[in-house]
Image 1 (spheres, rainbow over the protein chains, first blue to last red):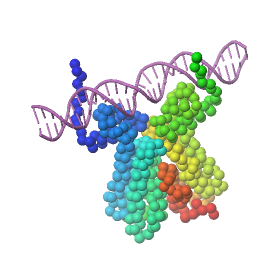
Image 2: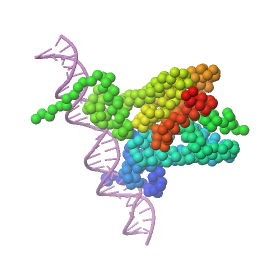
Image 3: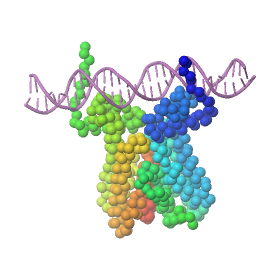
Image 4: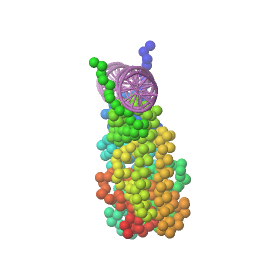
Length: 214
Length: 214
DNA sequence: AACCTTGTTATACGATCGAATAATAACCGT
DNA sequence: ACGGTTATTATTCGATCGTATAACAAGGTT
């Protein structure tokens, strides 16, 4: 009566890592970071807990990998959206809207983001990951702004561009936060409309100069 | 050789609760929410772990109390700062600056804020606390805006006022976040200056109309 | 000064955590 | 088809978690 061992299939390293990271994110989003235990994660990934230490040196390293996955996923979605625009103006507009509408505004994503942010002060690696992504986002925004103003014929010092990027980034972050945390308080397109008209105001454009389809 | 018991002094209920909450916040800020265990909290509060359940029904309830303490503390500081202004314009300006400068921009506070935010999706009580404070902040901002525009003679529909408040709140939140998370990237007054000129832009004021001392 | 209330300590319990180790089965090269 | 490699499972370990309970001492009352 030897109890049979579980049957299993071997997976490629990248595939397995990905599964484990996704399972980690599921746990954090649904159960909080407290509920993201190696056992719970393994359960969701369909493996046993011991396997985690075969792919990561420990739980901490896996959390770091998960943080990277979340942040790069967010910026990637926004950048890809902007690349679908045909003019610098459309690119900028798409980038802004993408950041304050689904799938970027997602309660699950926010939950993950906040859980990791709270680790930045404690863990130096998390701080480094944050900085990487913050600077990448800022750079993307600066590039979009530069192209936009160049097309308009407005010349812009690099300093002003950076200053605009910081403000716009703050506004976008804030609207993303509010719109996601308190989504039931806002109408369908209220946040997106607010984002566009606010950006127009921040850049000292005329109303509709960025948002209108004309 | 009976081992002596610890000597202790009885404290008033409010005092003891406060100590325990402060100790909780210390733990979360320095060790992360994972490190905020009943034993560690009790250690910092100078009591033994069992006492916690004499003042709270459990650890969760104490965390909720701690969350309330953080949020009311933040909004209180900003509102008190605004009340020191003598004109509606000064009140608004002070309110904005207070939200993006110390002691509100404090890495410790941010750490606490994020840790609690990540619980909002999981715990309904945390969601309710968040909503209370968000709405209170929005109301305070709307009141400041109403007074400001009334003094200027600009009439403003309630809808526009709300819309402004949402945008301003987002900008303030975002700058608070960036300025605190990445404080070493910015010069002394860069964030505060950026906040004021951005608010001017958002409200479609002329540059300096809000910020200048004139 | 003896008593009563209760804030506080001390200790124990069961559950669960992350990590380590040994056994095993799946896949690959031959 | 077979043997070697190793990805994966299974099991165990010590530490630590939140909670429960009992013993105790501090401070007020009479």
